[in-house]
Image (tube, rainbow over all chains, first blue to last red; front, side):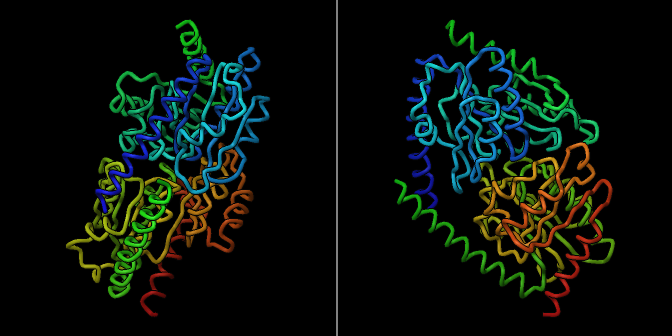
Amino acid sequence: MTTRIVELRRGILKKNDELAAGLRGRYSAAGVLALNLVSSPGTGKTALLEWTLTELRARGARAAALVGDLETDNDARRLAASGAPVRQINTHGICHLDAEMISKHLDGWVLGDLDFLFIENVGNLVCPSSYDLGERIRVVLLSVTEGEDKPLKYPAMFNSADAAVITKMDLALPCGFDRWAALKNINEVRPGIRIFETSVKSGAGLEEWLGYLEEKRSRRVTG
Amino acid sequence: MTTRIVELRRGILKKNDELAAGLRGRYSAAGVLALNLVSSPGTGKTALLEWTLTELRARGARAAALVGDLETDNDARRLAASGAPVRQINTHGICHLDAEMISKHLDGWVLGDLDFLFIENVGNLVCPSSYDLGERIRVVLLSVTEGEDKPLKYPAMFNSADAAVITKMDLALPCGFDRWAALKNINEVRPGIRIFETSVKSGAGLEEWLGYLEEKRSRRVTG
């Protein structure tokens, strides 16, 4: 049975990779920067996106978001308050988003009207790592409350990421967060990765994060 | 392809259920209370177990633990400091423990020598919900840092649990934790479930948790 599972899994991932390549082409042709945000449940993907969508709009950028959860449309409702176009994807038991879900939920959106497309994945540090959504940048989030060893425990996720955002830095002191251990562990799994140390409560690191987005977006447009 | 996946998945779960039933029989015959601890990554399963194993041993109870992670033996090393027998299960990419892994890692342990067997699952609020490990009690943990809506977003996990432990209550104030919303949401998904509000830092709720374990264990022995 194991052999059949491995073969079937390869088939699924191959099909997903093909669909993701198609999406990547569409994003590229439209000049939209697509980002895939992954983390544990409750790390603060939605809180970071609330701030980011609001701030980008205030600066005249056009951003939209797709947000994945097994159930509820809580996150889409939170994000829609920013004024940005937002759609909820409910996976109903599936532990990750895949390229087909993204493709379906983009239906009717004109990608050329967007500068940024944020995809908030299902909260899960394992399964989303295998599913390419055609994104240009994969961002892994890690909160100071989760423990500094998570990169070592979930290496596939951190290794496949292009940037890491440490969240909830305002709680670093009460949590006894060991900053150097966290930075060391992230770098061990993904050497040289860009790391942002942020808090949406205190505002720490957010301008740097926004600067990174704008830099990546302008590089995308100018080539 | 979808039909084949569904069929194969059913086959895997059926095989797991059969193995789990066998484990349940072994636990029962040996008079050991088996618990399966599930949560997001970083909720504090290991911290709660460190305290629990140490305290149970101090009171003369015999407890052992199996601990699941994709990689590293960090948790086994932390738990072994309690003096209890501990074994690490590395799943190498698999997002949950299954009954076969448990069965293999019990090899050589005499279950009749134990009062409690704790199984710490891979940190993941989705996939472990489908895999019975033969446990008598499934305990879902939720930290105050993760957000009160997690039970609604991950209903299968909360609905399949027998007890819920809210962790890191010492951080409730700086996190702005809404206790009533959390209790309401847990009860909405799993009405009447026993809930413990704990902190291994402040000691809150831990005696109640230990009392629950001892009560469940003595019920198990007396019938």
